[in-house]
Image (cartoon, rainbow, N blue to C red; front, side):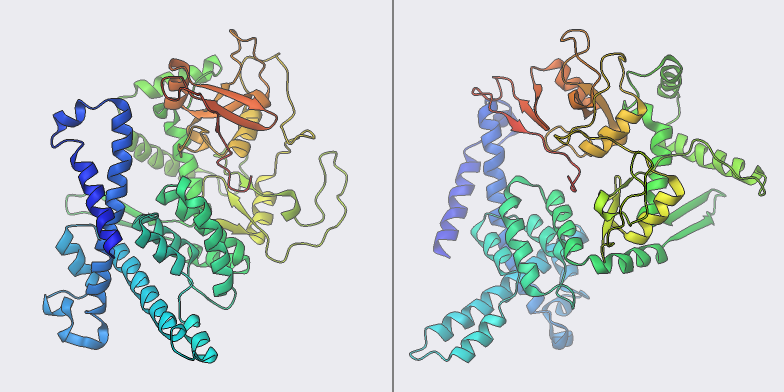
Length: 486
């Protein structure tokens, strides 16, 4: 503990040397600002570790079996989380996180002390040692990383919540292996990315449970419509991932021009985009008016008529081997029958939640599918220089390939992104080929064109070359697909 205390003092001193006012920080050179941000993050990790220890202590002293003599109850709170929230002025989520991580760290430390004591006995009993080792929780590496200051409490809770608990299908051994893999990657991820990565790992370990979780999400759907005292009507709803993505896609398509997602398009669509951008209504007002209009159209429709044509698209992302036998190849010939995976799964574009094989079959049957041809290098087939703009089909293919804006750490989805020519059409005689196009959100697209950042391609891999002001060596930065499956 002495070393940890010294680490905290040194971290606090480093932060204190940065200054004591906004003016002090404004005077710092850019290099010191970037280094200082990292120093502050390191100090926060060390302080959050102690906050978790304290929250865990409060939780143990507020155990349910202590009744009204527990610490939280003595202070007039119904739970340790409520006491922690009041004490530090945090959100409920942050208080719950501190208690959960602190409890995990305390359990790990107590179990490891029992193992250490058993091993240090003059004649350690192998059976007793094994029993104590079995009591060490599988999350122990998380607790050790937080204690060492190499993992934040936020990331620790993301891992703990994302990987879930032991059950009949997912053993402690499987979770431990997934955890080891995740901890090797976590230094390059933020807490949100860590959770998504951990949740995908859990889904892979428990594919058989995807259908059950999918059904539960669908059963939880609800829409409440009620009138307020002033006569206004309020809606409050919860939709399953599948239906929810359709709702999001609908309103994204309506308000797209407000996000800068409609550029480099034909004249007619550009005029519509300009009209939407100049609309005096807010995005929320446009969404509300559009919902009412959609309900009016549906209410006036002939119930005996089959409607078709354009509707908001929800794409299903699935590997070829996941598809059941009986489908046809791109030439229309039946594919050889293959044994269907017992628990295969896919995803709806934009949603981190997996969908079951049954939902894949239903959605593909309902919406159809579009073939995207890849060459031997895994790149989408080129279309040459006949067209200045990427087509809708090409943009759909890029959405599947890139998974959203490729800019470092950007989480904008494909619907918010634009197609960027790596080799500019006029200046570099660029081609409108999918291999030479990537998705960038509007702000990052503008930044790329106005700053000396460049994107290059080697085979199927895309890279950033930063400007010399950012990195004097201009070391290449990999831009992997945001599509987890790829």
